[in-house]
Length: 266
Length: 221
Image (cartoon, rainbow over all chains, first blue to last red; front, side, top):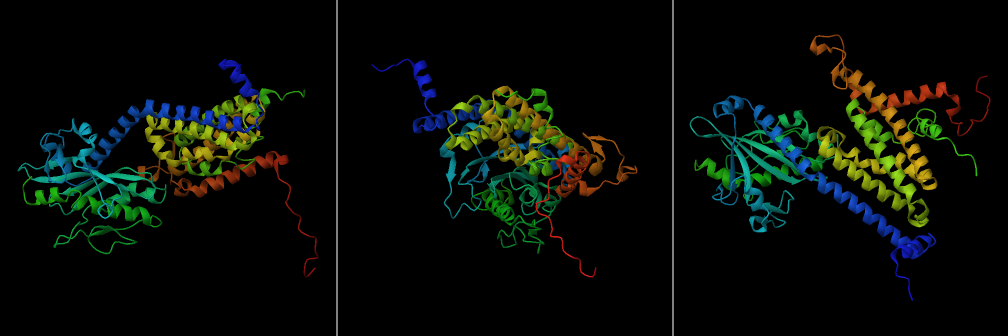
């Protein structure tokens, strides 16, 4: 009769020679299981704190972005010191009717509110795109939009790049760019976070008069009003940034919204 | 049974005499990258020390049951898991510093120092000596990082731990910051200088020449 006592079975297992094939596989499995538990435990327990850190970071980047654009601080003070937060319906290019910033996370949990992009459309490399996005607007006394802060995201060389693109009221001049999240190679692609690189975006135009989006991170020096200087040694990151910004300004990104704002319908 | 080496020796030997960075030239890559300021150097040192001590404990606990054929995989899995846990912890509680350390915390996994100690010491010794040995090596690494970090921060920015010690010229003082100190090559020079200094004091660390040049008649003599 086989001994079913788990303790003596465990002892017998440990007493097996280390070269035993069964013991090798079992030890590998046990070590991996214990390590997996340790890693997932730490990730799950610490995730809320990390999310709060990232939200605070994003808020700080947003404030720094607005503070860095000339004239915006005064405008912000006039409007009561707060940016107006709007959830927009991306494909329709107008404010979402029944979704507020509070209900947005719940709405984004629903896969029906995401659009799966075909490889041809997906120039930013994000796979799918939410239908509802929370943006920030700053209006002057007359109620005209002076500044729109549009969150963007795309696949960089190493991992995702998230940022906030600020467009002036004409919806064609970039007022600034803030990178909120990136994991590019430190010292190369990672330099997209540096103030000297980001400062170039202010005043860069997005589309030519006929409406073609011409914005690009140049290879080397910027050649025209639609380009910013690239980073040497970070071609893939620069290209990713170009494609990401073009995607989000295009028809699958904020294109409908930008058109609506230009028509004065927003 | 041979007389075991005392725990105190195990702990203090790696600080200077057997320092992993200056004697064995291990863990140089992270020492070059994270020593631009004392804060990052201290965080990196603490992370590495925690990882190396815990991995020494875990590897040493199961040392009799690690099959030889998969021992490196088992060790790396343990080290890598600990590194992920530490990385998550830093991202939660030391968010700013964790961003400045960027990939280097994850790279503790491949730090030769950690693997070297688990492979050479913890695999063959009971938990307590293993942990003491790991702690000693972690502290030896920390010592080098903090010395280099202090020198670089002090001469690169005139600050130490964020406090302005030397008034820089653009603040109306006398100190012209040495920008070179904030670049990776300066750490290379500093570590080189440190190795030279230690080997001048402790000549027994000087490695034997790998070959002796043949004794030939010099032309024109």
